[in-house]
Amino acid sequence: MRMIFTFIFLLPALALADTTTYLCNYGSYSDQEGNHKVKNKFELNFIVDKDTSKSYLLGNNGSSEVKLFESSDQLAFIEITATGNLMTTAIDSKFNSVHSRNSIMFGEMLPSQYYGKCEVK
Image (cartoon, rainbow, N blue to C red; front, top):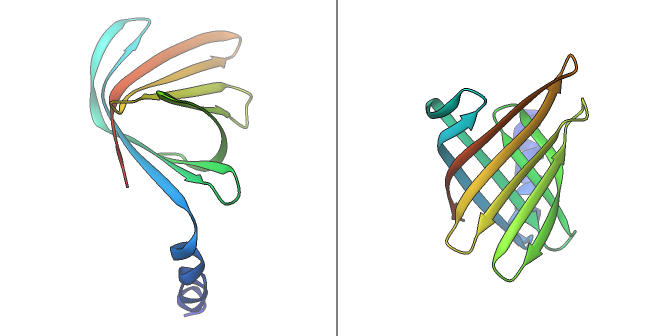
């Protein structure tokens, strides 16, 4: 019940915020073993809040604040995970997207890139 009141209280503030959401779905990826089709749905959602100049990633593993770099024909989001790994996502002017994971575990590089398409909400 408390959650409902909190949601109702915050809803007007969210409606007035100047935000843009990018919904990105990735259907294929590459890693050290080659190119593959994604078996389970892989989706990343980015929320850009122009009022606060902050950006957020909502993904399979929760949410986090990310850094946005913008130019006339592309967006780039950079995330540094809690373990220090670097993740980047680029979106071009046609909403094609590449999500790159530069993970290191136990001193070993585990790179991967996901390829997909985004839509704006």
